[in-house]
Length: 115
Image 1: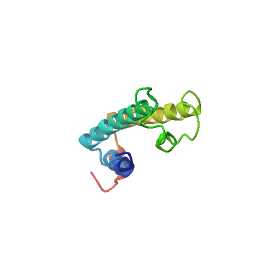
Image 2: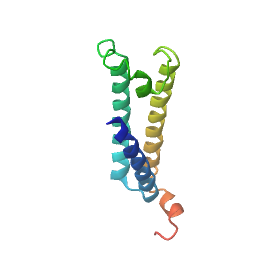
Image 3: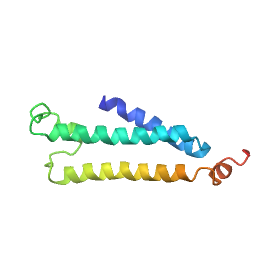
């Protein structure tokens, strides 16, 4: 599931760019839902990897699943996870700002042939 998320995320990013360029509200809203879902999935996955109840299941895979190497959860690994979640949140904010600005000239600027 995690491996399939990478190409799906790339597709959603290109769809978001296209939806902003052409001012398609429903597609931009779908991207917003996907970014919230992705952040939730990322957070739950990290929680399960470092939770005391499920720690034994992920003991051998912790390094490869989190790409944090041998860092402890209270150290740099947690900082990297927090930065990733903050970047997802800021992407959501920028997406919402773009959607609020639909109809204010970006479509004409990006597509000069469109009226």
